[in-house]
Length: 258
Ligand SMILES: [Zn+2]
Ligand SMILES: [Zn+2]
Image (cartoon, rainbow, N blue to C red; front, side):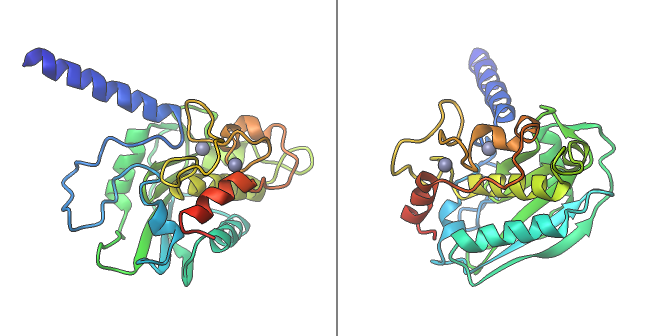
């Protein structure tokens, strides 16, 4: 029995390490006291893809944005995300206006567990199984991620976090460095792509285009390319936000999106 427990611990630890390797990997938290009649807000990214894409039940989306001091998302970044969501999701309304400054976490680096704890502390709005509004949590941090080159992470089915300080650090004056607005626009869209079930984590692939080992797209120049969430991508950035390629769009459309 003891050995079994130890093995279980090893498996849990391994799973947690895998989560930190990808901005889109599945969670281990689906057992955190969720009433089966309630919407589970601690499921893996992509698990609620259809709730995002279709209007079968949730006809509107409200994004609760909490940001640490100095890292309010730019209006251009949010407008770009809004456009992207309107292009792909069958919703009557999409709101990105509920913004609140929260206190600094006072850390130079945040782990996935730190991020989840911050959500526990600060998130106010949750989706109801019986409601019509899908609530999403959007957190902007004042430090870097545990993997310093990562700029964003989709960590639950309706939760995304962004490394505000890191995005600011690598931004500058175009064309020498990308603007903060362009970095945000790109990374915001990429992480929401995971919540929409890309690639093959809730929106099944219509054609094989998944990278091995992560939920990303093999098409060069696609928004869901693996590098798009990292600083590496922006060190060689053309200045235009990468679009979703046809294969990613096919998956979303086949799953009830636009
Ligand atoms: Zn990603
Ligand atoms: Zn793609």
